[in-house]
Figure 1 (cartoon, rainbow, N blue to C red):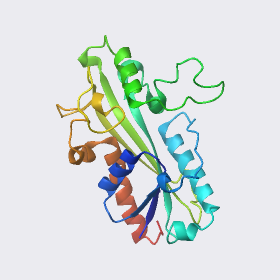
Figure 2: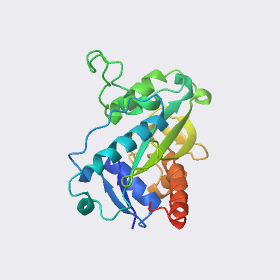
Figure 3: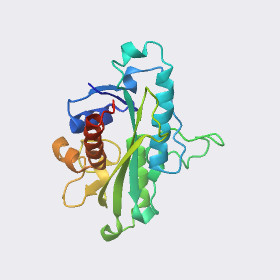
Figure 4: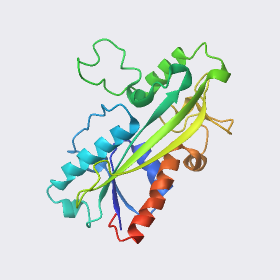
Length: 233
């Protein structure tokens, strides 16, 4: 069975990925490897951040003591994603800064040359609403974007960026938070074709239409093809 090491400590994200990909894989995450290093996501695009995270963590796992015991079999791969919200009225912001949106303009939060730490979901949402308070609904277009990078732990992936998969979900920004489900900007995001926010939709519905679902479906199809072609992913 292929082992996917999910490059996240976000339990909600782990649950989403498992729900979408199903039980054909063995799942581990960075919650299982507390000693794993934090990878600085300082790249200018989602794709480059995802590739950097997957590549650096795969290198770290190659030198991990007891790897064969902790990651069973020779088919372990790191799956990293970078995802976020792009708002048209904000020229694509928060984009790659989605997780630290509320912190990036606070004086003294980040030292010169350092990235700000992630902000709370409530702070990020509050800042987004503040910036969008005078924007009418017809100009509140936005999208969630997700990029995945899959890098084999051993032997090392020949392509440094690994296999790349992406997904986009178009929608609009609500005028106030709606719903208690999901995480991140879900209470403010109204996907096209649905009257409810991501936070109001059931997990089954969200996991069919979300940006992450689209990227993971591409990954799932690719994994089948790779395995059938003799690749040990």
